Image (cartoon, rainbow, N blue to C red; front, side, top):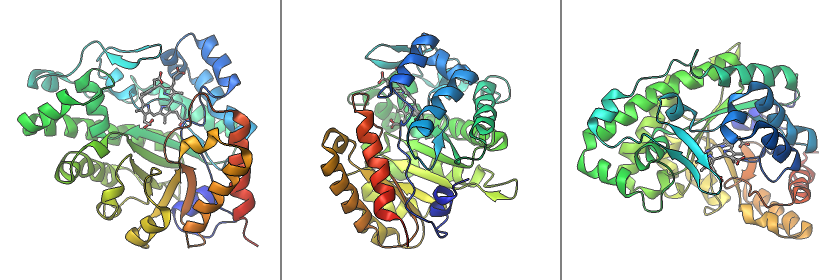
Length: 348
Ligand code: CP3
């Protein structure tokens, strides 16, 4: 198995800078679109371990990636909490039973990972078998705050008025919801670890829309609880944990104190500055602007060189985009990205 990805997260020696890409299994790949069509809809794809395994491996077959990421979604937890998740074409996720008042929060039942979410752990076991040690497998979850935004808003949102309204008006209700989510997430990640994932990542997609105090109180605090609650030793191995707050570049020092192994960065932070700010505490993942993939091969290679040159240690950097790859990217440009990261970072 190529260990560069895990070694970089743990700041152990690597042969070259490892790379994986958020949403690497997705609509920009024709083979993904074919499997998705066969499944009929996105949730059916997530809930079928066979097909989830198939699409997880598609980018691994096509590109020289250093890690696979479980094909699933962050909204599996609210779905298992019976909020009536559905996806409408072009509009993203929606909930028919959103969370609006204390009674809704009190009524939320913590799902049993071994039954309601067994399709996820079954997919992990199957993927591990199919990967056969080629590359490590990343498990993941949404952060409590990010899950709460979808649950309270009832889907995606422009201004997050309902979830922020609840936070300002009824802090104790919000904390109750976030605490329930954190407990469920700990079980969920431990289930994924038990089933075989080699690292875990927390997607805090919407933490960046909070101010500093509320980020600490409503997002970071619950991610810290998760870091403490996750079984980071399994089967004789360390399971590294990465926290990714999109738009969280202002708070890297605080995130670095959470106990996580690595911080995911979006493209708005300069990687070298980020490294200076966090010091030796954590590894860094990121952070090419996903839109660079709309440029030519030569431009992609130049932008990759720039990012690699900003990071000054031999290890501790996992290359990634600063957010997910877009559905209309040409897969050839993804190949240019992956190959150039390896070409320019191979250690002599
Ligand atoms: O990275 C990977 O390859 C693993 C798979 C993965 C998906 N979603 C697949 C997916 C991961 C890690 C996620 C996480 C996720 N899901 C996040 C956090 C990451 C981020 O983008 O910040 C969020 C916010 C979600 C919720 C969600 N799921 C949204 C907003 C959407 C987009 C809806 C749309 O139509 O664009 C999804 C759907 C989704 N999740 C797709 C994929 C490949 C597209 C579904 C399709 O095939 O139509």
